[in-house]
Amino acid sequence: MEQSLILIAGAILMGLGAIGSGIAIGVLSGKYLEAIARQPELQPMLMTQLFITLALVDAVPIIAVGISLYMIFAL
Image (cartoon, rainbow, N blue to C red; front, side, top):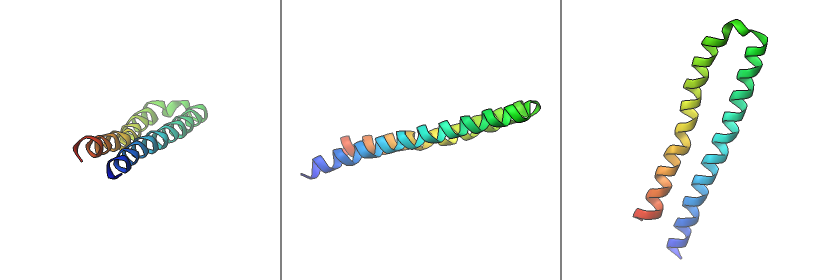
C-alpha cells in the first residue's frame, strides 16, 4: 500500500510540474509576442528577458522530475 502511494505521488508531482510549466511558457510567449507587436525596437532586450524567465520556469519541472524519481526508485 505504501509503495503504491509513493508511485502515485511521484506521478502527480511530475504531471502537475509539466502542466504548470506548459501553461507558464504559453502565457510568457504570448505576452512576449504582444510586446514585440507593440514595440518592435525592444525585441533584443525582451528576448533576453524571455530566455532568462523561460529558463527559470523550466527549472521547476526539472526539479520535480528529480524529486519524483527519487521518491519512486529510492524510497
